[in-house]
Length: 258
Image (cartoon, rainbow, N blue to C red; front, top):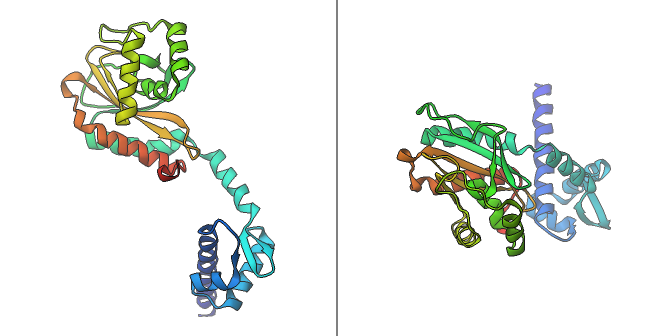
């Protein structure tokens, strides 16, 4: 009985600590003990005792007498978590869900200079067709849906430099091969928040892609759904976009803040 009571008491203290941390996080400036007690429903003496323990651990700092703010140790923990976050690991579960919903291949790609390299893929069992989106495969930015997402982030000068550098080689007759056509396509990407590959890498294969962003708002990867042309469904675009947003959120991206 005593052990159970001790366990319940410990859990209660942890819950109160979390409530105090949440309250501190909701304020950009240091917060008084009185206000913290009011917001958490704690007695001032209880809040003071818990805050003192968190100060000792570096989780809270006393800005001045009776006024508190979050401590530097939380930043240290945050940096550790951020360093351990992997785009691939964060995306995999969401990719599998998208694959189960659509029955089609789902790809994760990152930019490597002038190419997209595919770092993960869930394969479709519905077709024996071989597509280029295998792990480790590479393709030019301007022919791939994911590559267009990255080019759309670039400014006009960077896009012109890409065109000069690469010459916009065509992989199929459908590939974009002029600066004017590329600029028009990238404007559509910016407007709709998704990009398409309409048999531009491989005849008979079409893709829809949406961007994945990290906690700073930087585009770090692209999620794409690839299908045989006869099964291509443009109505899947919102689903791809929503899945990419969920992965971004898992990486710490808060859309409203950027």
